[in-house]
Amino acid sequence: MIQLIISLVSFVAGFFVNKKASESEGLKQQVKQYEEQIKLQKEIDKRTIDNHLIDHDTAILQFKKNRANNKSSK
Image (cartoon, rainbow, N blue to C red):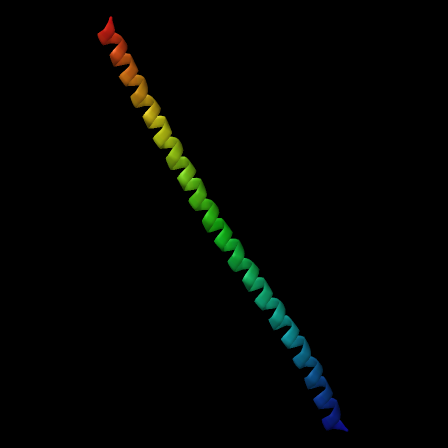
């Protein structure tokens, strides 16, 4: 009788442990996906900033070139 109770308790405990382990794996996968999304977003942000800086520098150079052309044409 005691062995039956111990077996039943062990089975129930094993079931809950397995369920928690499964939930843990799901959470680990979600964290991994979140970290990948953050990494991708940072790369996109970096490229956007770099492109903005390049566009800004190009605009300044174009402005200086136009100003120099205007001075030389006067």
